[in-house]
Each structure stands twice: as C-alpha cells, then as structure tokens.
Length: 248
Image 1 (cartoon, rainbow, N blue to C red):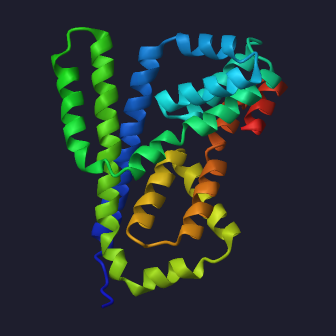
Image 2 (cartoon, rainbow, N blue to C red; image 1 turned 60 degrees about the vertical axis):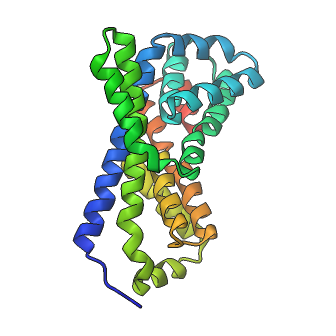
C-alpha cells in the first residue's frame, strides 16, 4: 500500500540525525586529536619514508581518528613546512582512504542499538573525570555514541519511505552510475564527511530503499566529494602542497 509520509517529520528526523552524526564525528575527532597532540605530526613525518610504512601509518592513524580529511590536512601542512615530500605523502594518503572505512564497517555491524549506552558511558567518564586526559577520553567515547545515535535516527526517519512508491520509483530510475557518483560527490562536498554520506547510504540500503548498484555509486561519489577539504586546506600553500591535495 502506497502511503504518503509526513515530509516535515521525515526531513526533520533525517537532518536532525545527520546533525547529531556530524556532531559525534566532530567530538570524536577533536577528542582523539587532543589525546594525540603533536605526536600525530611526528608519526606522519617520521614513518612516511617507506611507501608501505607510509600507507600503514596513514591507515592506522585514520582508523583511530576516523577522518581522512584531518590526516590529509596535516599532510598538506607538513609538506608546506618541508617536513615531508610529495612522494612520501602519496602512500600515507592511500592508507588514510583505507583507514576511514572503519566507520562504515562499524555502522554496518548494526551497533546503533547500543548508541545511548555508549553516550552515557562517555558522559560519565567526562563528568566524573579529574584529569584532562580522562575528559578527552570521555568526550571521544560520547562522540562515538552520538555517531551511532544519529545513524539510528536517520534510519528511523527513512522507514516511511519503504511504502512510498513515488520515492521507490525515483530511486529505481537512477540507473546511470555516473549520476549516482555525482550525487554522492555533491552531497559529501556540502557536508564535508564521506562517513556521513556512507552512513545515510547504509541506512537506505538496510531498509531496501536503494539498490546495491546505486549504493556503490553513491559511496564512490562520497570518496570524490571528501577531497574538497584537502583542496581548501591547500589554498594559498606552495605548489607541492596543492599537489598533495590533488593526489587525495
């Protein structure tokens, strides 16, 4: 039976969930950056000499801080300062784009039902902590919980679309892979998070709103759109730094 969803509630739930997801990502990244301190720059600049070590370093660091954009922006800064060469940066960037997939994998494991428990644990650590390090750990954990909670809200918001034939027909009509890639790239360039785009795609695929082919195209586009952050960070920087952004 074709039912028309309450579009206001649907859009409010989707955008609100996306906002909470992005807030969680921001808290997680800022918390981990605070914990890492200057060690992130040191590790990247000292372990990138060998292309395989560089790729492993980029993947490992990005898997922890969950933002390939942050890793790439740091690399742009290191190349600008002459602490790393363009050739050294390539392997790290490849690794960073592997490490950032951990978020999507965690989400796909359907851990969203534990989201509020993770938020509560993180808040408890932050609230009762007596050291700055524990506060950052608490904020990081709480941010991760908000990521899961935002994901669950987006999934709930899109459930009414399962019975809306108009939306299903519109999704089915997108048969051109390049259109899907373009949509994923534009959406990610606007919100500046390929993880958020992938989360939305996973939520839609989990409720059978889109086909696997369209989902793959959207995710490919997301990984194009996320490179905009690196391009912005290279504005006004030396030519080598701009080349790093282009590599990404």
